[in-house]
Image (cartoon, rainbow, N blue to C red; front, side, top):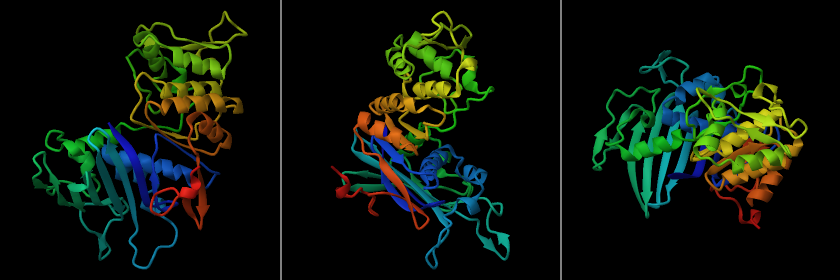
Length: 384
């Protein structure tokens, strides 16, 4: 499994240029408008590069005009968004560094150059390097539509001319046998899971039964929550952690998970009404959202990396401590990246997870993290 060691972003919205070390549990706390969500969103864009949807995703969020750094640029500086991730393979002590640069369509004489529409984002450069005990090998090197890739024997192969400016090589080179390093990085990034918008309205998928299929990992939208609970109860046959999470949040309450047939379902039994099971349509928004977070963090098998954006939304303040326990517990099985504006939640996570929350600030319009040096390390004065 590849572990995330560092994320670097430049030229994206309020992120002028920043490199952030990533721990097993990374917590970022700050007020509205400081750019916390841009940090979170940059992770989603890295995954989009692996899935081959990077330029489409940028177009969907308003295009390059909206996504580019809006502050001043140095004279001659090109308007580009740069994203990179450093991943460590602990078994082999190898570091995989993937970087992609996105820019505007080139124009000449008022017309676009190459196969592109006028306002769509384009991949300008893309590179994958592997560092092993001080040696660096370039596996993929692309400049616009030209470049090379190394095959499994280490031979350079031309990327050819089939790759469009809107396509990432990472998402397009699907030959896992011929390009094992590329396949490894693509699978690692594609396996990240993001949770930021659990719907709790009347039509929310959280409030409906789902197909009874063994489900070890919760979907990003929580649409298979009932199947995740059923997998714990009837496949793993161990609900101790989820029962503890429910009782910690709602003392005396119990999660009821019937053995599924065609569909999986669940309900809650509260101590005030022991003879009644409350189905998801009857649960409050906060209760349902907490259960979805519990499913995301306590599933049978967790993804290699979980990112949470303001998970405290709609939750009562009394749920901050149980939620912090969930997050700290999950970080023992996988990496967790969390952005929040709740100082109370951050403090509880610090207590249960033995981590230092990082304070996100804004200076001269630029998102920054208090104590972070330009070199991408936190200052020694920030340590105990």
